[in-house]
Length: 366
Image (cartoon, rainbow, N blue to C red):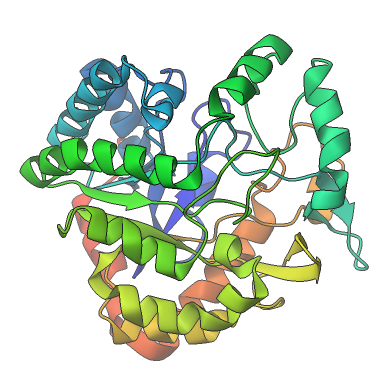
């Protein structure tokens, strides 16, 4: 395992030079965020992203995400053109040296929270989700307000149209559309040497009446079986799966079952506060035994990228409107250091070896 850090590009208040100072972090997770779903990424945009990351002395280890369009998820006629664009993007990312692409298959919305700044007893703030508050969030959406935790929420008219389009889409129908997508992009990933890593749905249950299917360790196994290829794998997200108490307890076993199909890991912690309700907490706390998860990752020979994922807002980031909720610098840096220590405890010199390789291979420009 080697550590990476999410970076949202030049507009991110967390700078690459700050990330490079975090012990153990050698890679960046990012994307060409300006490209809409269904369009191919240009070689120029990809090269510019790689250059920025390498100039800072880091590596672009994961693209998160090449977004899957709603046309693909819904099985609309234009999906074939969108899949062709996806294939083109994979080939171009491979040519630029990117080894892993994370994506998700959540209808309409990405990860969803109902409170972006819930205050914990120590004064830090964190992301919280409670299904009981979804009615308030939906009302805000339908009146033109934003959705907590999701960038670029659809307009009220777009949301109404998408809700109507999904009205007759069952969970099994969504599985069929995922299979259709994978049957066409996995061969391209194989040819390009790209590892595809689907992210579990977050939270791992239906929201706003929309189906969600990648909600458990068993579902991740089903994804891998849809196209049985080493290129077709998963992102192990302990926070997404950990929001379900049953899945949280199973996480080390899930790691051992998935084995070499784990191409990427999001390692964070959550505390369940009720049915379909949880809050995010510091990495050493919460319902997920991250030490056992990391031990299981080592046991299955995981040698891929991992990141500390979300973090609380702590210190002078509390109340800072410029900071991106869940993606501040300090608590994610603390999380990375914690994960580095866990991995070093089970893997020893392997961590130091990875850092030496990156230092030798990628030097910042003078």
